[in-house]
Every structure is written in structure tokens, then in C-alpha cells.
Amino acid sequence: MDIGELIRNLRKARGWSQGRLASKINDQFGTSLTREYISGWECSKHQPGAFYLRALSAVLDVPLAVLEGELERRTFLTDVAGASIAPVVASDLLSTGFAARLAGGPTADNWEGKLAAYGTDYMSMGAADIQRRVSGELVVVQQQLDDARLWSVASRLMTLYAKTFPGSDGSKAVHWYRMAAKAADESGDDTVRVWVRGRAAIALGYEGASLRVADALADQALAISDKPSLGLLNAIMGKAHAAAIRGDVETALKLDEQGQRIFDKAGSYEQTRDYAVPYWRLNVFRSLLLARLGNEKGAVEAQEQARRELPGSLPRFATHLELHRGLMLARSGDRAGGQAYAQAAMNALPPEKHSLTLRMLMDEIGSSSCHASGAH
Image 1 (cartoon, rainbow, N blue to C red):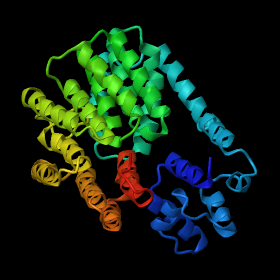
Image 2: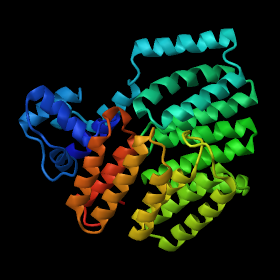
Image 3: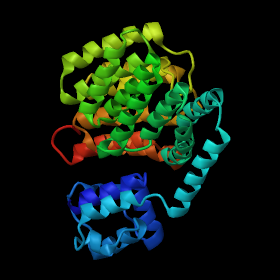
């Protein structure tokens, strides 16, 4: 593992953007480091000198010897992942879990209420906040799995939990999506089985991560039921993004058309929950899809349609649309302009509203400056 890859992994593990890492170093060491310079490190355009190695060691809380290559970097990252829950936190979680078992825990109806609240909170809260809260809920619900209805609850919580990890790491997010699919099967509820797989497929496809897993989960959803539903819609759109990233334009456009037909039968009136796919959200999916396909006219139309109905309470999704425009600029040849446009949009969004998906989109745009071709 080279130093650039290590810096990127450590930064993403903390849920930081490149700009935030630069700000952390500047605040602590009085420097004027830019986001672009961090990108240069991560793209291996240049390497940090002795001063910045010490700065990175301090702000990322990693031994200097690891950054200097004197300790094996992959082993270090594995050890960090295994010890990421502090003993006191683990103690609290264990206590909560056993207390829930002894007390019987929330009823299935109460759990459905919790899920509804999380579905709304996800749309506006940061990944770190959601992850902390949902991890505790998973400890509680696993004590109640004698009831098939609670397997349904657990599967949807796992799906949400998976969304708080970067899909590009190829392990944690995928692990939880697969666990969620198995848990959904235990519920015996085909609607939930399709939804969990479809939600995973669109998440991975939209992020441009683990595309084979996205396709596999989407295909499983299609095999379970071809009845129009939000889960099926997510699955189809996830496959469309995977096809677009692979350069299969014809398949991507056919799946886009199929997704729009399913939406006409199963689209949501609910506007602000993760479990819903209203018209504005479908157009967010389509905006990125068409931008990836190089269909600028279609992408702009989808962006305009999304903006007309996007609730003002969800500024993060307006930022998604701006990043799609940044990607279009980068792919049209104006890589610097695309990056600058996207970064300005990110800077306008309060940091606590940032999501892992937005950061992955920034990486997709930024990678255009590292490689001659697109991000994938």
C-alpha cells in the first residue's frame, strides 16, 4: 500500500473530505494547505515531506512509523478496524443488549416507528451520527429475533447501517448489505426481501462501488418478484448505474426506461424518507446516470425536474445535483472547472450535512485529474 492510498483510507475512515483534512492540518499547524494538495498526495502526484508526515500523524492519530513505511501499513489498518469500538462503548452496547433481552425490548410496532424516524433522519443527518445510533439499535433488536417481524426490522436497520460505510472499501458496506439480505429472507416477507436488495443495489450503483455485488443483489430482487415496487425500482436503477459505469450505454438506457415505467406504477407520494422514491428522487438517480453516460441534455433536464420538487429541508440532495454538474464538466474535458464547481457546492453545504456518498462523488470527479479516463 503506497502513502497516497493510506492517507485516503485513513481520511475516509474518519468520514472527512479532502478539504476537511486540509483544514484540520491548517488549524493545528498554522499552514495553508489546500484540498488540491491533499488530492495530489492521494493520487501519488507528490508525497508529503517530513513536516507534513508529522502533521498527518497528529491529525489522523496514526504512528509516524506507519506513514514513513517502517511499520506494515495494511496490518496497521486491519488492527485499527478491529479495535474501532472503545471498551467503554462496547460495554455500554453489551449492557443495552442484555437489558433489552431481559425486558423484552420494544414491540414490533414500536420498532416500525423507530424505522420511520430513522428513514427521515437519514435524509438530512451525517453518516457518523446515524451510524452511532443504529449500531445501538442493532444490538437491541438482535435480542428479539424470535419474531419474524423483527427480522424484517433488523434487515432494514442493517441496510441503513451499511449506508454509513463507504461502499468503495469493498468489505464493510458489502458485508452488511449481504447480512441484511439474509435477515430479510428470515422475515418471509417478499416485499422486504426485494426492498433490502434493491436499496443496496442503488446505493452501490450510485456510489460506483462493488458493481458485481450491486448487480447480484439486484438480480436476486428481480428473481424474488417482478411486481412493481420501490424495491424493484431501486434494483433496476442500481443495475442501470452499474451498466453506465461499465460503458454499456444501450443496457443502461433500457434499464432507465424500465425504471421510469416501474416508477409510474409504484412511485412514492412521501417526500422525505429514505424508504420513499418520489419523483424528485428518481430524477436525482437519473441525473447522475445520464451524466455518467455523457447525455448532458438529459442530465440537465433531470436536474431541473428534481429541483422543482426537491424539499427545501433536504439541502444535501441539492448538493448531489450540483456535483452531477461538476462531473459533467470534468467528463467534457474541463476537469479543473468540474472539480472547482463541485468543491464550491460541497463548501456551501454545512460539514455536518455531508454524507459518504457525496464524498465518493467528489472522488469520482477528482479522479478525472489523476487519470486520463473517467473515474471507473
